[in-house]
Image 1 (cartoon, rainbow, N blue to C red):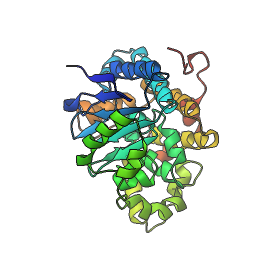
Image 2 (image 1 turned 120 degrees about the vertical axis):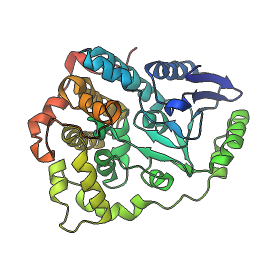
Image 3 (image 1 turned 135 degrees about the horizontal axis):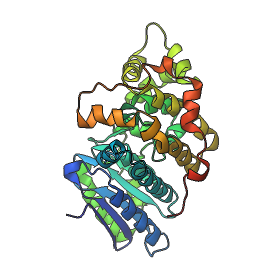
Image 4 (image 1 turned 180 degrees about the vertical axis):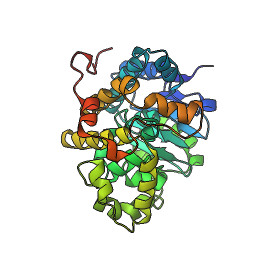
Length: 344
């Protein structure tokens, strides 16, 4: 079975993820296929690009990391590095695509799925949508260009979302600017057909419904009051003795996630916020992921979450208090000759 379908239909280029039994998790081959389509269609006679997925459980639950884990155990550092290089190059081309990009984000859109689904110009969610960046739970920092999305989120939601992995509902995702439109799932097929035949993105505005309520909007003030610190330590020390619901949630998530990854995530979001550039974001992220197997907590995070499923990772640092500035620096230094390249 083909894992991905790419084709042109009338006025639209179409990319459909087709691994529903694996929650449409991205493989290396799927990343390459998306990139090839983007290159072929940048100047094609189409009006827009539609990206969707088969099944109702997930648009894309993330990258397929089993091969990364297996190669890392063998001491093979190049497989993961190649995967991330190619994926990030695809993310940049998607972000910079010269025509409207319409994405339909049902169910889970997480990790690598955010890099495919949330860099579009017209991002559509429905009642089942759950969008998250759970990378810190497996020893990575939010990547696939998501540090730019986090840096652009209102207030300090970016730092909160990045270190906690909070799952956004449809209303949350619109509030945090990870999506743009709420349209019920049962209306999607009709809308897609109209977009394909006409190429008119204005149809999306006409179909959009009022956005649902957002928990993040209610939590915004409490998050902003605390998550403006320069480091994760500053953030944690700013939490009051009687924390609100938002801050209680944050404390529990931060206590479980990889301390080094969270500290680097805060630093990366701050750097990207100053530059506001997708390639800067991907470069910052690749500095970490290039080193993640050899120096970070990635292998242990995958073991605990995916392989043994004991949910008891033994991180390199016991808590955020044990992460030093030099630890962050060692994961974020420029890679020089190994820096992320934008050529194939």
